[in-house]
Image (cartoon, rainbow, N blue to C red; front, side, top):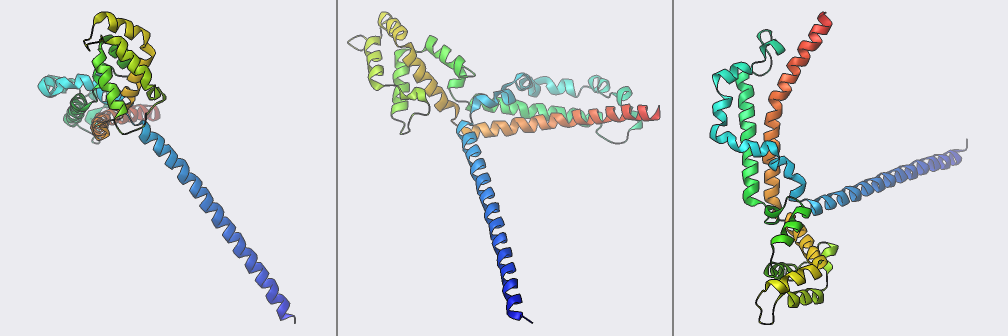
Length: 266
């Protein structure tokens, strides 16, 4: 028998299988590397744009602002016996026949605690929000309010912050020319450095585009500031909404159980 030939054939088969395994491993590693780079890029984009205005509806929406009243007199309403009786939903959910789920008292406690967390998120936001958000909730509101109320000294301070922060411009708007800003200041101020209404009005009209660029750059720099506080606001608000969701989900399940039961029983 030709043992040498069979051995060579076996070696070829094993070698081919080894190469196939190596190729499959390389492909898997290549796919993994592509996925890693993709999600790394996504994470970089997310962190770069992680800013206050995008999350304002969470902790400064109508519900969060309304929750401000809860610590003062909300508990008097929520835990009032007559209110509690009206919130049993006995007919709707057939609560007298249901031993599962939350009681009326438990649902009210979830609502109360949820509103308290929304209140805390809203208060924390108002204390820790960047200054630009005090003038406007978004870029457009801020720029329009600043153009209306800022004086030349405001723009000088903002320009100093942008140019001496140690960072490159965050936006294309921040790449304005220093020479243009110096011309604006010269036009806005009289020779002795005193701000005069006549010079200021003319300079603001002439260099409005420059001022808008400065304000947009300043808004972007500030809206991504104090991110730890932003994260705290988000978690407080999400926890509050989660607590509010529990009694809503409980009531929904009970109602659906009654509806399904009536359909199947009928």
